Length: 255
Image (cartoon, rainbow, N blue to C red):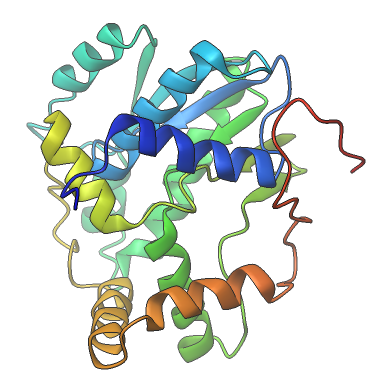
């Protein structure tokens, strides 16, 4: 039994998502969101590798939004990008001081996420990108479903593809079939240069509650997590695109 997800397995799971939801078209220029965490660095590895042999040629840009926390050093990530032959752009912002000092938000995550995404989308357009790749994995999608159910009273989760008409960019989530446990294993195996999150709200959010709830449910009812994910895939959630589970890139699919 393998303890760590190998690169080939990462390529396979990532390509499965890209193929089944038709995430990438020939000529796409994709901004990869790099937060400095294990998820985004795993996504960077996956797309940098697939770029070499995927039948629909595409380009990628690594893009980091610096929130303005002091002593946050992204140079090890820039070095990794150079190794992978990917340009790394770091956009400096004052989001941290606005959220925690100026606004003094009691629930800072929502405002921070909104400002971060706004800065990211704008920077991606300036880099000439028509698509944005975020590193939401299987666990993120399940946790989002629970959060929406418990706190919003609706059935919702991240869509594999989301078109943002105001920005004229498309968001894709190529790690949707990858377990967080496998991302952790990949991080350890390939010694990813993860930047520790200095945010004072990290680990004390509703999402952390959902993560612990999923773990508890899966412990008490083995297989519950996979069944929840299957329910998401089969649930015909609003805004989700059609899935082509038997498609391999190279075949033409009518949208």
